[in-house]
Image 1 (tube, rainbow, N blue to C red):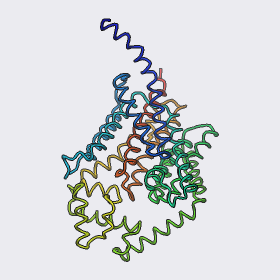
Image 2: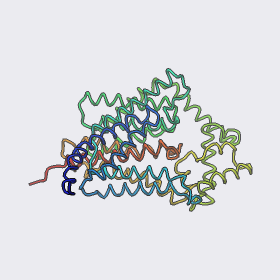
Image 3: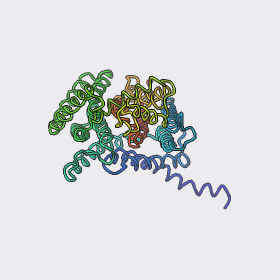
Image 4: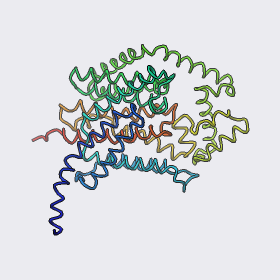
Amino acid sequence: MNLQTKIQATQPSRGKLASGLPYALDAACFAFFALSLCVPSGYSYGSTALALFSLIGCFAARSKKPTQRDTLVLVGMLVTMGLLWSLSLDRWLSAAGWGYGAKYGLAALSLWYLSKTGVRLSAIVWGIALGSAGALAIAAYQAGILKMPRVSGFTNAIQYGGIAMYLGFATLALALLGGRSKRQTVALGLLGACGIYASFISDSRGSWVVIPLLIAAIWLMAWLNGYKRLASLAAGGILILGLIVAVPAYQKLEQRSSEATQEISQYLQDPQKYAVTSVGQRLEQWRLAIHLIEQRPLTGWGLAGYPAAKQQMVDQGLAHPSVMEYGHAHNEILDMWVKRGLLGLILLLLFYTIPAAIFWPTQSRIARVNAEQRSKLLALRAAATLLPLAYFGFGWTQVFFAHNSGNMFYIFSLAVLWGGICRLESQAAPAPQS
């Protein structure tokens, strides 16, 4: 058999692979969201499949579509952040962080490939919605059957509560702004409420504080795109639904809020005594981080230097020993700054602002599609924009990127959501004017 015959023999199998790969990618994207919280390491299954299919596609079903500038910016951002997590001022030759770097590289590859192939909107919408419902399902099991004092899914309670809150609000944005039938809108609204309620019963106060920010963002995105009546209805509907969802958890919400107020007051009166409380621990970590940042604002202390500096302050009686229980500052911005200096802080802020700026649904971006599809694009871009906004809010009381769940959910959500936006815009472009 000559070379030409061999090439011809392989073409049918490659054709089948190319035709079936988009469906496999859609299934992986659906599974990524749907399984994210309801099974152990649920976010890993879809992301692993997504990375694997993207690698296969690069060799067997490479797309000839040109790469958009925004895609290159997002890919560059992911690669840069992967390098940042992999390196440190005091651990240049250490391979400890390269696992995160590899995950970011695979997420960048997946984002680039999905920008070419696209992701079906239905896979994203119902994946997020079922992920929100799955969060409540595991919460109900842990609270009702296992009688756990604090539900946490299969990660810690703070990570679980934050991701559940995002899934809930993203589902509500897709429901209220997507121009769907009343039946689908109601179904998605109820599924979105599941994620919010799951976050409430997780006692994760850090996820509750982002609720006003997310409601305001949904209202603003709809209002600026000319959907003024819908903006008011959406914001009011979310607020009412949130209050309804909060009623069953009212006692717990009131208790946790009162505890926070009391712990703040106690810490301010006697920091050394009350630094062991939940809020007191955070305030002590923040105070210590700010003190260390003032000493090295440009370079930071490094991954090894930060705990060593904390230990020295503890030994000198300048900090409570409880600060050594955590390897981070309980605040994303302070933690990045104290460890990796001013450059790390700038890159972290760009990690929030660049995706938010690229996803934000401006009128010119919504006008890229025909009139029938504009509400769907608005809803998808709104749900995507909520991701970096939510993470920015979560980061004030928790270092989400210190945990595998926080990293994996963020970077592969960026890839999937951008793939959905690219597909919708490429397939629903308005007809050219004659």
